[in-house]
Length: 366
Image 1: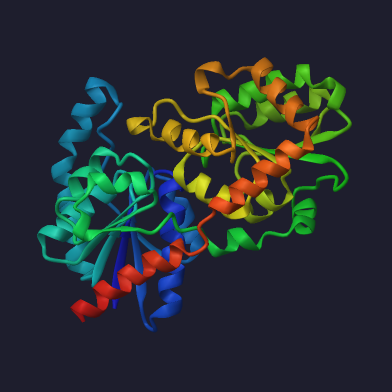
Image 2: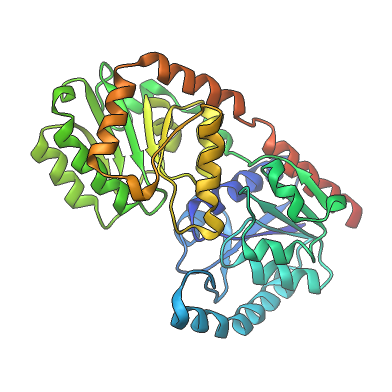
């Protein structure tokens, strides 16, 4: 039996799909999971490393690309549908799951048109354009937040939460110190802007160091910069005399979460699912150009209940960031309260719920 998981472009879309794929292979003997993405997306590198087959379609996003980019992307839609049809005929899946991203829309739509059982998983509070459209055609919709349910037909919509890779919860603090060459006696701040980094966060953290000199011997950084800013940020930390480890990308996220005392990150849905599952204190800087401003909605939800601190991207600079870091360093109780509230939100059974929905569809169509 074959199943296709379609989506990617960012780790936020991809990693829930990987978690689902691994759980499905545990449950169903002889099952083979294929991924479908784009050759330019992060999935082209991550999926082979995870041991799954991946196929590619020619597809680009339509939202927020300017007139030229939108026209170019629209012209690729027939090509993406042609690629999708070819892949579906070749693999003949028992079910197609869409997890978001450029490749999810064409593949899931084509599968639905061909009569193949389909499910989509919506990770954000406000669904993107693709999932709003797909929701009319697919058999089942799984959503992360209760607020998302109003966008889909109630009879086929299920509140599941956002699946988190099981290994995320198995990180070791001691192993993290060794993996990243960190000092176990120093407060650790983990910075990352997503799988490709975030220049605005990188530069604000760099600027903040000039305001944090009094804490130079009390804090260290673990910083995932993305490829473009890696050398610049590595040199900057060294010039300012701060301890830590700077990486363009890390696959050891369980250890990165485990070793961190405070995290600075964007507010993508999958990032928040992992942070709350691990119960981490975090300063969120939502990406302002996310479709439907979903990152700001995600961040506000956590801020309102005390599970995170938030700095809007337009307000982010070295001074505002350093002031918030100082406040938290000087008030350990505030960090402890964030951790407890965050942990209370973590959904440990989201993966089980999504896979259960898939199993029901498979059994109905065997």
